[in-house]
Length: 602
Image: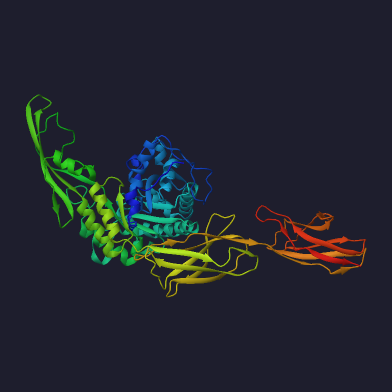
């Protein structure tokens, strides 16, 4: 089977804090994953079960491309990614923009490769309705419920790990005079969607333009009601960009960004908050002097929309523009201005020329480093990039440096049991040892014991414990079926989350029988008993030892719902008869036999 693995240099390093997340639009999947000849596909997906993929035999060149791709080389910095693939069109219709783009890869293959990289997938859903349409949907109880169910079905159908809402129409289309009316319905919608998703252990993320403390009177998008939705969401991705759109200026000034972050963490845990960073810059026309010739590019006007470019093109662009960028320390962004002169002729053939004055702003590696310092300062969840893979390599390196600098202490969990096989009803003890990587014990740490039955996919919490001064826990356990156990500790800013290795506990049925010791020949011999756990689809056979061989005596009898049974036979000859009870096997339980017992026939 082809092996998809981290490069050796990444494997050898201490684990960084996974602070990187970001969006992957349907049109730029190839930016973060290469197109290869073979891709995995989902195998018989089961709702709620982990995604599994067919194994694909990659060629060496394909394998090298995958392992060298953006997602695979940076996956140690990430827990999840946010595909930008879906648009809400009505309460019951979500448009699949990935499919619309007619990609060379089916989406299932892309999802599988992301899953194989160990990444959770929380796709973004945007608002594709017209002015006030979504606001009106949310105001109606039935249509709001339909939207909740439609989103929930999308997540479960594709086995995504959650959903990210990016409903920018409220802010930029509806108008702020509608916010007071829309906000209560938005809050109710978030509550209802959160309840539905959390019931299936799925994540709810919200991407929002900036919001500020209302007392500071800074222009922000109060429609998104951060303080009200805070208890219900798992992620808040702050769009700390697009500060300047119509006129030349910084993309996302650092002071403006920090103010929004400060408000966010005043109303919700900092561990929910991501700073959204731009992977793009803008190039504005400030002024056009003269009359431009027909040979000049179209649309040269001070009122023209700014051109955008990727951060990883910024250095080359500055060179082409003949400019030397400066770093604006107040805004923590790079900027420069330049001019273009266009000579030629008018439509009537007259000689003419124009001078186009332009200004460029963008964030660079230093910009990222200074915003990553905010992640450390406020202990945030991390950063989200619009979009992943557009940043310069030097900026990615700053992310990695910051992730290592603020890495959580690695927690190591070990689980042992005094028994690995026992009978039904027996109590056994599991022991956990929780320490740092250097084997220093961690005291006072909350530990969760989880169990998974043999026929189940999901883990269930069955006990809580707190480590002692020696980092140990000890929990007596009683289980009703063969079970796999593991320990889990939740991550904090200081310490990583941890999972212990799994241990399997086999449970054997407990069979109790009550045979008589002596019976008069010809009288009925009745053997009663019971088996736990009770399984009414099992049957009981009484066997006799005849001529050195065990043979069934009579027909099998069923076990009742309580696990009880009674079998009857007779013996016509005096002597000693050896017998045993045999309980049939099932798909989940093996055959069970009682010890041999002897009955005197008088």
